[in-house]
Image (cartoon, rainbow, N blue to C red; front, top):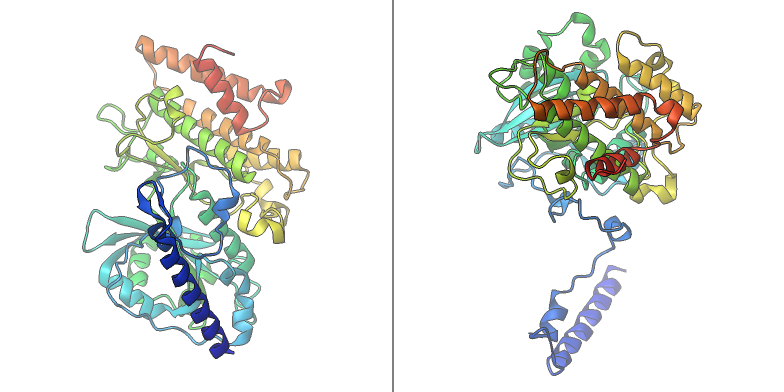
Amino acid sequence: MPGIVKQKWTDFRATAEKMVTKAKGYGKRGKENIAIQFNKLQLSSPTRYQTLEDVDTTKAKINKHHRQSITFTVGDEIDQADMDKPTKKHLTPLFSLFEVNSSISIFSDWARVWSTHCDFTKIAQGTYGAVFRIQSKAQPGTFTIGKLIPLQARTGWGSKTKEFTTIVAARNEVAFLATLDELHGFVQFRKAEVLQGPLPTALELPSTVFDATLDADVISPRWTGACRNSEQLWLFLEMSDAGIDLETALTKNLPQNPIQTSRNRTRSIQPVHIRDIFWQVASALALAEKKFFFEHRDLHLGNICLTHVQGPLPDGGLELWTNTPTVLVTIIDYTLSRAAIPSLAYELGPIFNNLSDDPVLFEGAGAGQYDVYRQMRSVLKDRWQRFEPLTNVYWLTHLLELLLERKPAGRQSPANTQLWNRLEDLKDRLIGNDKTKKFRSARDIVRYCEGATKGRK
């Protein structure tokens, strides 16, 4: 059979070459020989982006699945773990995505290669994984973010552990990252790999330093067990460094804090910062609603990141509220999100997380985000697969309320007073939305802001 395939390809190539030769005698297109045009063509399977409408707010024309990782290609080879048929079948949902390398790297060897080129600093520990900031040794100013997620085993220890991510949930997270990467306001996805083995020294040391700052009950015994298990499977996700989360920015004095000034030590926040943060989050959600029927469903302050603006933002709509953006905003963490992922929609329908499986989520108190979870359940009536962009309105209302609580005391300049009034008016309209039903989606909020800016209400 291989010989037959090779012969057919040879015949096809010969025929194509004849066509090119013949084309050399037929005119020109745009002053370029048709034969040259023909040679530029490539045979490839259509990508999912060809099925989506073009929008002027997509990122720079970069094929995001070929974005270079922070680790430069220097000929290093990472040893691969043996994979039997049951394990391969277990990982099939994850390996079905072309964004995921369909092999298992030995964790210790993977870490050896990465630590040759990078330094790891652990910056977060959650129930479902840990997050590291990774710095290039060759280019000290270059950073990336790595998220390490323990996966549920096929059988035995760790196969029923809720703290470990199922293979289907891992697939969904990669699919969200790869899809939303295309839009402004969402984190840039770089690569996804499956690893096997205990936590290697290169990551264990920064983990020990970070974990010492946490309360003892934050580190799950299951996580500790995963770090020592020689058979443990992990998903490693590499993403762009989106800066610091909004919760940290509002409470801590850090050099990289883009909303901190010499006069403002984060006890309050300036109205231009509120305007820019809210507008960019609302615009990003509106775009995602339009293209992917997206709801974030967990947009607390920890899932909104800020960084300094590096040059003008390319989003053509931002000038309506923001002539010169003061911060760059990125939305992260799509664990609870819902969307119609083009590459999976035909086979699976919308991708979503059944929040009813975690009733504790709706029992929380002491933070406004728990009220939002209950609002979502009330409107969706536990039908979490359904598209209801009103959930995005709930989160935007929660965001604006929290930001406006940071309004500084004392006299304000006329320009600031005018902006505070606009923001307070929008907050009142959002809070009263249950009665007025004016806003059913983030897109409605964006349209209202655009109209208000142009003098139409």
